[in-house]
Length: 153
Image (cartoon, rainbow, N blue to C red; front, top):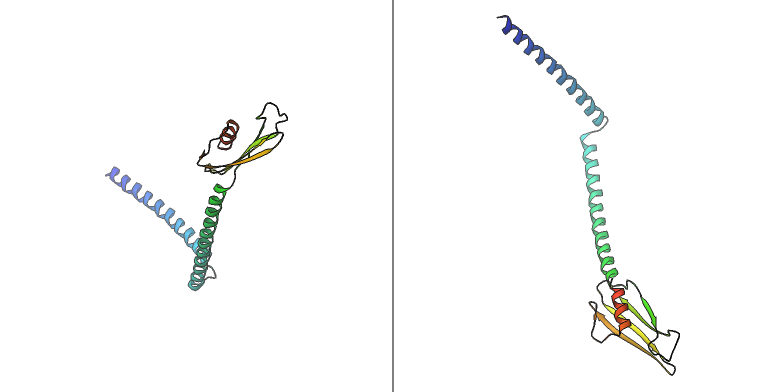
């Protein structure tokens, strides 16, 4: 019988301690809630939530507009010239000074134009060759191929 009584008293003691802990926790929660709602009515909270909802809607609209603007900028940037490599060379052995040149103007997709100039003593010729997806329909000179490969890197 002594062990049975000991077990009962132990269980009652544990139960009492748990009840005290729960009571203290409940009182702290009650205190926090009073502090949170102090001076506020249900209508005040509802107005606050409605104002937050309006602000959230405005924020979502603004974010959507900014996303569209950024997508537009991205598409425009892809079509812009990304670099302008230039190579000067001497195509004719009797003319010095590397007066001729080849220049590439291509976008991120490899489309654009190659402009080249051949300088001779009696004339200057300028050529423009269109580039689509990194390739030209016209035959490219060695200098033009080098410039194109440089601009596509």
